[in-house]
Image (cartoon, rainbow, N blue to C red; front, side):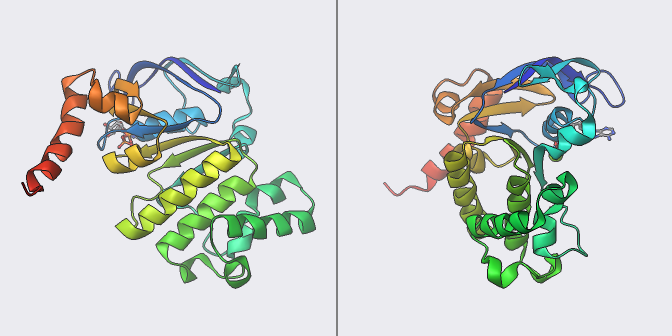
Length: 250
Ligand code: ADP
Ligand code: MG
């Protein structure tokens, strides 16, 4: 579904954000970009929906270079959810969910009904919340609306940039479970950014470990833990596992 070939991005000096890297993401895959702050995760995500343009290399979506797509319609067809949520504050919940269907000129009554269904699917009681304003919802509920909005766009591909980063652990756990179940039942492709190791393990089919703009390793959590390709990956997993193990009573 997505192919990145020798893609690089610099802001101030050469390769300060991403060194040339290649990656393939299959349709229906849940891929997590895992790395610390500044490792290039957001940059990589924004290159896919052309919020940024690469300095070199090529990104293809369904075999077609993204630069051949009109950026506006490209972004309309790729769901984008991020930590700051980006719900329009002066629009009700349902109006936010209807953003893309309305831009597309879809049938209003049908879209409205579907928006209610999407809210229910992200486990937000539509009857109760559809007419509320975003600031009348908790952070977790707002993120549910963000996910519903991305799904209501009909996008097969969702890009998610630390969407649950600001949530408490219990709410985050609920949203992770909801997202994983939806992704599997709807067969969406998701590229999800996090710096949280446990979130990556919980969600990912494959984890891409990024460090200083380079890919350290790509693989399932099991592969990364059992066959780390670099000392960085080895440390990433062994330190927290060791810390947990140290607490175990013997
Ligand atoms: P992450 O999302 O993993 O925290 P980013 O992709 O945002 O990382 O950033 C990667 C690198 O590029 C960092 O060193 C960051 O400081 C730098 N960077 C990001 N955006 C800009 C920008 N607009 N101007 C200059 N440097 C930037
Ligand atoms: Mg970021």
